[in-house]
Image (cartoon, rainbow, N blue to C red; front, side):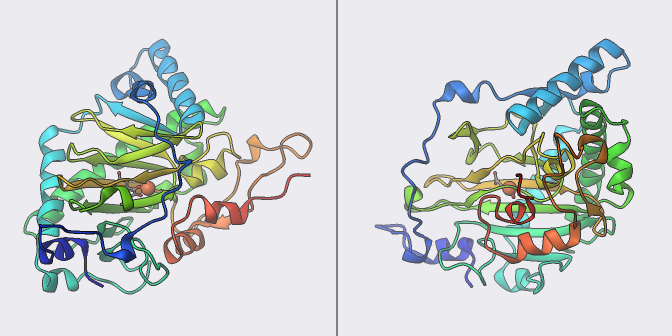
Amino acid sequence: MTCIKTLVAQSSHHNATLPSNYIHPINPSDSVANSELERLIPTIDFSVLTSTDPAQRSKAIHDLSKACQDWGFFLVINHGVSESLMKDVMDGCYEFFNLTDEEKKLYEGTDVLDPIRCGTSFNTSKEKIFFWRDFLKVLVHPDFHFPDKPKGFSELALEYIKRIREIVGELLRGISISLGLEASYIHNFLNLESSLQVFVANLYPPCPQPELALGMPPHSDHGLLNILIENGVGGLQLQHNGKWVNVKAPPNSFLVNTCDHLEILSNGRYKSVVHRAVVNNATTRISLAIANGPSLDTMVSPALALTDDENNPPAYAAIKYKEYLQLQQGNKLDQKSILDRIRLQKD
Ligand SMILES: O=C(O)CCC(=O)C(=O)O
Ligand SMILES: [Fe+2]
């Protein structure tokens, strides 16, 4: 399967049209919201969340709780990760995608749980219509794997994912408290000492007919929190009250979305947000998402303290994270289809 980068390089620039196996029937009800809504996306100031002043900290936890409940999405600012590390790791992604097809072929992988996998679309073995996206996915925690090219990329990535893990740890402490649980509840219950972290770099080259294509379909993510940065070219949209809201990260901020296992753990209080990536015909977009989940062999179920048999029965069946991940990565990416499989009927 040819990656998009090569496909674009091979096609003539004049009168380029989108190959028919990339044309998606666009749903006309998929309306894009006006930019007003975009300005309402919540922002969490990380320095306030980690403040030693209890009043400041509880205000930030309250904001975090509202962001998770109302949006499933927020920006994080003042997180302490240096601009140069963020830039260097993004440059590494760019250089990785610039390796030759032969070099990248070494990292292709065959199984959805292979530690290093690069490819195109989402899961070409299950798709008839493809997405305008190339990717690199690497399992980087609890064991660190990484491609050995380009030179120096692996060291940068290791430093970056460590910092992300610290930030995710703090966010999840705040989220535990906001759910009325002990600060360390999520960490202990989901064995975050050996949490799964996946490094996902996405490349969206310019597309000849962007209105007919999609970079990624509407979907939610596995895991707890996904931390995303991008190269200043917008394309991410999230679903909010039935509309698609464009999201663009202000320089040096993180885009954070809540994922399926937080929805399960919170018994539906914090729903994973559906999002997609659209493409453009002018500029290459790169995004880097770090997926942060439970440890692979954890059975995830709604927290006991958040359920009761009478008014609030468990809304999701318990499932091992590894099994969920295999289902999500091994099928077509489609809305919340895997979460829907484990929803329990409410009478
Ligand atoms: O590139 C983006 O903005 C979205 C990426 C994404 O949704 C993912 O990697 O799961
Ligand atoms: Fe995603």
